[in-house]
Amino acid sequence: MKDFIKIHESDNVVVAIKEIAVGEVVNAGGMQVTAKETIPAGHKMALCDIVQGGEVIKYGFRIGNAKEDIEAGAWIHTHNIKTALGDLLEYSYEPVEIKENTSSDASFMGFVRPDGQVGVRNEVWIIPTVGCVNNIATALARSACGRIKGTVEEVIAFPHPYGCSQMGDDQENTRTILADLIKHPNAGGVLVLGLGCENSNIDVLKPYIGDVDPNRVKFLVCQETEDEMEKGGQLLDELISYASSFEREPVSVSKLIIGMKCGGSDGFSGITANPLVGRFSDLLISKNGTTILTEVPEMFGAETLLMNRCENKDLFDETVKLINDFKQYFKSNNQTIYENPSPGNKKGGISTLEDKSLGCTQKSGSAPVKGVLAYGQRVEKAGLNLLSAPGNDLVASTALAASGAHIVLFTTGRGTPFASPVPTVKISSNSALADKKKNWIDFNAGVLVEDKDIDETAKELFDYVIAVASGKKVCSEEAGFHDMAIFKQGVTL
Image 1 (tube, rainbow, N blue to C red):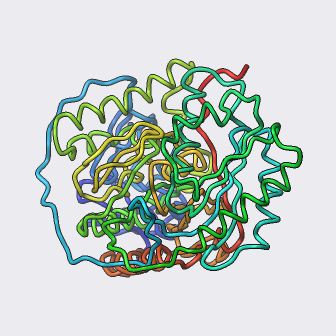
Image 2: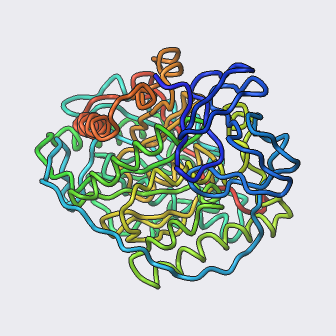
Image 3: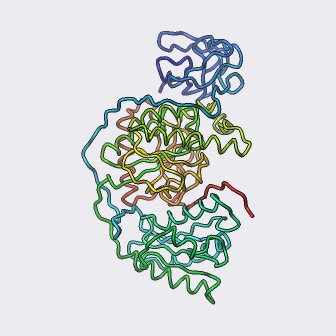
């Protein structure tokens, strides 16, 4: 195992793989540098003197400017580096040539729905239209789970606090996301549970949902029935019977849609877990599959790398709008655009938003950008898509599911137990986390700093995802965790 890594030949920092003690001599690319202080694992050490205002280079790009003169061998972190990013920017399209790879098809065992969609789970979902009926939804799911049969895996309620007292785009977001989840193919059956007097009541929501198969989607307005528990139980029994008729069958991986998200990142995330997911993305896309990258605020500082991979000028313009609209969202709420990274990120070795973003965007791999999606918009184009959503773990992962992701790959250096509406694969950036939190972590990318080959590990991750798509439960599913969160953007009445 290496003691440190110099990620790019032009970098003027190294990242400590394990703690570098004061006085320890580091030999990087022929340069011998003595550590002037202890450098924690995941953190950066200067390879040369950097003058005040000078650029700190990592991943081959600037991650900020020195606040003060920094000596070779010094620890570089928030105390002596600051972001160099500005507010709204002008961009020019400078496309890079990308060779699109193709590889042989593969298959998984999925559930083919009558409308041609494919699911990787055969669950029955209860979607409340408003937070007032959350407890009823949860009680109905708990009761119905004892009556599942056939291939039905679970009855799941997705409580949330919205659906009423919202205005404008905020209310539109709720209606769109709820409709997206109702249409998600991982659900073999759906009970839409309303109260009756809410702004986003069932009659209002139906146009957002569109045409439905009455065998698959059923509606219940609690205020209009004498005993909502009895009626809800009857409807769930009908949905369970319908969903139990589906069987797993071989499906091409070209039908797979995989969301990509990171949270609780550390100094290893951009070295191990995120590049590994990028290799996975390229591999799936080479088989005509689809991936979705989100958390727009964590593209700031690395956005031009994505913009220049856009397949055409129209997609470039959409990506510019994606970035600047999100910056404007911060400004219109009188918030600092670059209020990032989080305390946990900083503790793990990430110093600036550029540092975080250059690591984060590595999940996109090297494929061209084929689509740019608004929040709540369902994916239409195979290949790499960019999705408008915030960095918040629960909100972004729910947004990925709403856009059609069957599975979310979630990289982390700190660890988290949360789930999303779809199987959420936790990929650790370091082996210590994987060893410590075996009940949270599904796949360990930390082996990449232990001299494991990244292409070999990407193939192992691909095989693991195929197993999950074919029915293998991830840790959060084994624990019975299912979360969802909607992007809150407006006034509450």
